[in-house]
Figure 1: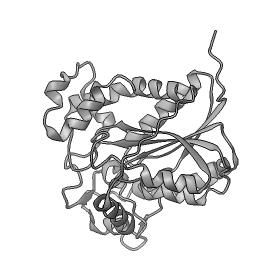
Figure 2: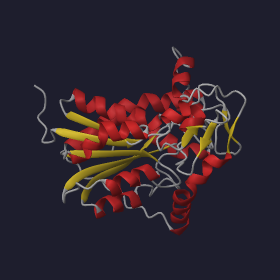
Figure 3: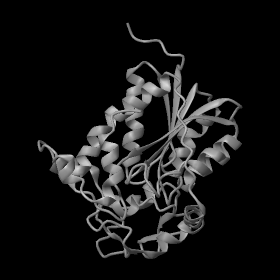
Figure 4: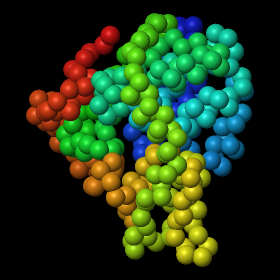
Length: 303
């Protein structure tokens, strides 16, 4: 006999730029659906027109539990998450929400505390934050993970999601209390304030076919194909999600800076390359101090 849960419906709200966080959101959707829970999904990273047409009514729905999932941006939640929190007008006292942040480095400094301000903002809107936790996915900035480590992280998603779902459906309370400190707070504030300038440094190379993929898929409608040059033009609404750079079919967008991975970020391509290949042992593919948090994440069973 299937277990009976007090939670009957769950709303998943997520923002994903280049696709890693979306995989986790979809894993939660599948796990909850498989357990007989009704799931509503709100994708904050969907193109603006699609979001307005398909998801506006979802903010009027009150679920037994909400799960907010986002990738860490400069030790904080990305701007679209805050835009959603501030715009939702139906938060009621006691409305439960779990906050799951996703990082490339695990629950280590500087990612620790990345949920703090987001949680505070949620509570100011009347939400009751009952659970918060970090999950780990391949990094899409600064550090390029090898294929074996990427596959190890992807392969852990179902198990990690199942354990967290157990916690949530049993009503477990889990709250972190790490303080970010003044330096990280300033970094987060600076990213929120200056993110719009990022797109100004994106170059369009001759490989551009003017297919319009970037315009159609930008989550903030920051990109328009110029009627004069037939090339993408960027406004000041960039949130540094990197979707246009990594997702461009012609790889025609370039950013001259260490933040962007020179070989791109494509989890589907990694899965194709690694099809039928057993990933290396963690000690081999996860070496070095930079991977300390990732190694800890892969090693832990449950909490």
